[in-house]
Length: 284
Image 1 (tube, rainbow, N blue to C red):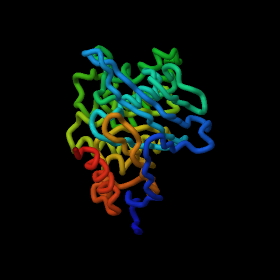
Image 2: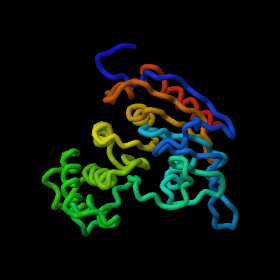
Image 3: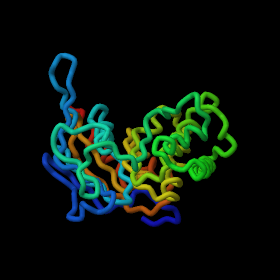
Image 4: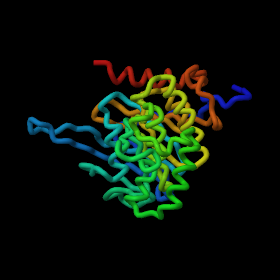
């Protein structure tokens, strides 16, 4: 397939996985690589039993990769991000970052949640630079970087506004800028556009592609939108229904920047294959 535009449908192949499979290569200790090894996660239930969220999950994320994660609701995608961030502890297995086991919060990671979670009593620039206050970074350079990030997402001139004066899409842009403020080595994004209308969602996805290409930040991106995953990702990981395991991986080789319309058109039927895998998971 040839085109003057970067198409989404080019790929190097599909890999399917069974229980105890892993995608970790020999160079798993490479800087910022994430290696998930046979991870199990259980949560206590109100009746005293346990909910098995993740079971024998293994996967690898290489340095510099944008990896999309799709799967049924409740399959443990958000739980996985919390484990990688070090804000939750696995019940079993290991998570490694650059070859070192993750045992606690990772201060050099940025996290974008489903809602913007801005502090309503702080202005836009104060919310954007909040990580600098927490991490003890110099104030003046942090404010300068915050202004640059806000300008890059079209929010120059809104620095003194409060979150309640912004639309939902504008608030989420501030949240993305906040996550990038301290120049994180890894960006975790948990359905960041889930609460936004479709048109704004498409616009923010395009803006996010530009931001990440500009700042060269590797990312793990959870989404329920298959076109969104195809548009943004270098690889797409498909998870099973709970308990979450890795079902398959699709490697996308189309150059970036890409065109969002190509992801919706799904010229090589990658999205159709992912939907088929997920449909099988929902069959009784």
